[in-house]
Length: 278
Image (tube, rainbow, N blue to C red):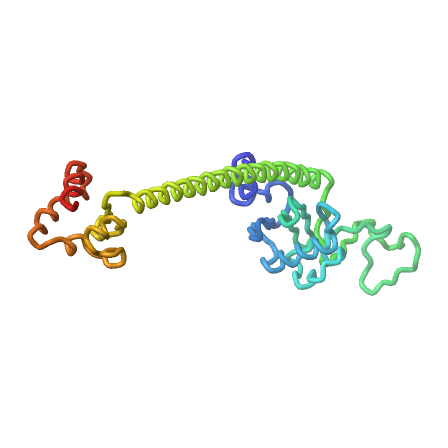
């Protein structure tokens, strides 16, 4: 799944990162966007945690704790018992994967056992009236600790994602290089086209025969010196005018038909129109 869709597959497909280790929720901060699964802090809290990690754990690749409060996160108390423990690893400087655990009761075994209500401890290792059973004390703002094998799994995923990111970066570099080359070729093509156009304009302007050009609407967009001398119309007087407005009334019908044929790309009529205009 990671080979097909890293890194978003870890939050959008099944299995996902919540299946990797025992947790109540998980989240991915990737390209400044947050994806959340299960029981997690709000998006704003996740961003605060990421900022705290970057400021206080910059040198480490990750952090695991059963108490964000004990770890020093300033906003830990505002999370309540919903999120107490966290494991987080960096994929890149700004991309992070999080796992969260909620509050749980921790079992603490005393040398003695449960005291009767109101009974005082006499300081001895075992109270005479102890029942030798486990005494349970609720430890607030703390989750189950992260096991070594769980952290091994998390760090393995971290390595896989980092390698995937390197491949993606390599592909991006290659793609950028291709796009840059295409842009260079496009610029070269435009420059070549401009050079050809400039040469055509120069040839038309310096030609010893009268030459004009019209667009698909029949408007004059080219008028060289020779045709200006022949007709007595300057470039400024001819450019932008419809060709038929520059023709003698008696020839309008013929020229109109020839112009229509020429605009359709029929070379014979193009040559004939050229002769008629001359």
